[in-house]
Image (cartoon, rainbow, N blue to C red; front, side, top):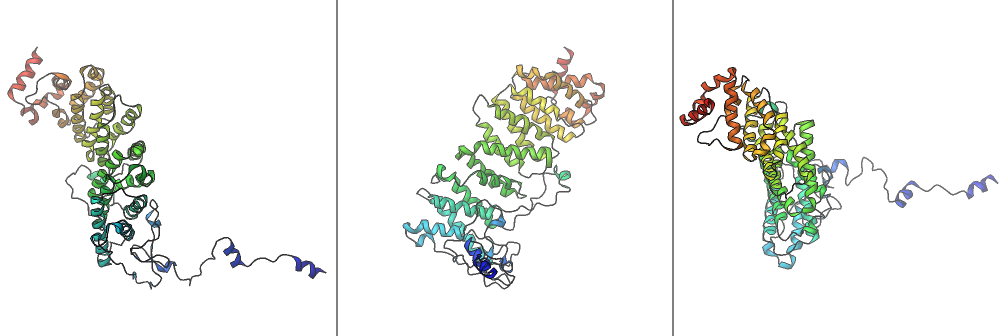
Length: 465
């Protein structure tokens, strides 16, 4: 009786059958073949079991994932020696009819998605050269294209660019970097070993974005926020040549994709905020400020409140960094652009400079004085009067300091007439200086002695009157 009851109960399905039913697979055994850990060769592109031969459709690559998400090099026949499957060059565009060029273009893009290891210059020499020549052909094709790129082409192009460019950055040691920031004559850092390929990929992206055959409405689906975010992160690269390419490409993207403009400005703001208040470590501040200079120059009047807040909360606080010398020229240009757009901002800008004014760093003080001079040249007298009292109070402290370099910098320049805010400011500096006994010694310093005789006579004549 009990046996009959137990016999009617449903039996538990086999484990393999259960896995097949729900689309799962059992845990691979250590001896399993195919895509096991022993078959993965990082950096050396090879072909997996399921991947087609080079030049045909390659396994899809996440356009915006980490480099670890890019298809890793897998070879079912690899025995631990890093041997790769054949990586052959494809036919030239000149050797195929026009009707097949787009298909060949996609195949070449897929071929270039494979990333090689450049840490060993003796490894995969032939394959690296094949990829380099293929990349050059892609650049030439994009430059001479005479028809709109299809969505498939744009998708594959961004996939190839992402696979090559979006990689972990390995910065040089930064322990002594803050102490060396004022040595602007340092030799250029070493070039990325993969630069021979990266440069061509950057050139391809630049030509692709700038091409009139790239339709903005379609391309924005692939050059999206995720792509731009990772592109902006690359500005932290140690290599100036790479940052120059990024600067140009970002400027083109900003100009062509209007829908992305608010996002680009917001993320640049985030980079600046992190640099100012958290890390003080970001290599591409100068290049981002250059892009911003062009963006600010195109702002319509009256200025939006959003743009003014960017000035108050991002640009002015950049003056507090110890690394100011690395990007001061670009920062000064951006702030001057704001004052030229809206003269009423001069008061806020000058008070912001006074807030971060250096006390003991005379070389940084000279940078502040130089920037202040440029701001005053764009300031109207009425706007200048609102900030005149706190400004001269700070200058008086500068003139009484032991660092004569800052005191002497703003003496009247030879040949300038004493009219306008900047000239009034220069004259007032001289009068403050003469009223301070501890600062009278400045007239014996070389900067003052270089003034022409006529300038000195004019100054003393005004003092007497």
